[in-house]
Length: 342
Image (tube, rainbow, N blue to C red):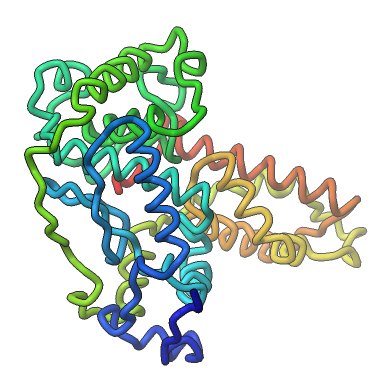
């Protein structure tokens, strides 16, 4: 099926940012997302689950309380919008088949919870906690905890009981996840076994909640893309600590004898994208936050007139290790900062 054409496809980034979300008019139908949703339905059918979460386009991923459906972010429906998302956020959440399916399984967990009102069950509450618990603005995960499954980044299961269930469900649903072996000896295994038992119980049953309501549909969102991204970027805003001088001076040289060597700031700028992506992959930290850290490090390298002396590949590798260590210390050290609950 040929891809639908839109007038805004040929606009520059600045012009596209002036467009309102409601004017984009993208849909799940006729895109690669339709195949992802179909695959999700097939996985649910194989498990005997009758509920098929309906989907719609919105500004972000979510499944509204009391609605057995899934909102999908608009940018995934078109390559031009994905390109803009990458430029504005340095990442495209759900932009690959594997990541999109991982998020869809997670959101399907929410939709099934809503459709079958699973949070009302006593055993559910005993294992996951009260669904009525207030969603935190921040949360502080323990990466070493074995009480929770590990599925989406940022140890998201630890943010709220509903997210704990959705993450557990996603691990259970994923084909060939081998969860019994993967989580053997973990307290989280009890949750997985409960989900397995619970899904067997509701298999073949019609959910009591069948509303097809769609919340915050794209056509009703009047803000411009520029306003959307300003708000989204502010969500991840972070002022990095100015404590890098000693570490940077150990890695790079301030010796006048090396004044003809390449500036350390130039080396970091040249490999900035690679550094940001690798550190984000291994720490779970948001790339926007890491970009602010790199800005500060580049600035300090300039002010200290540090030079890159030695093999460039080794310097880049050592610098990645430094940024990773600093990131982990900031996230989980004595003065660790809090995670934003999405």
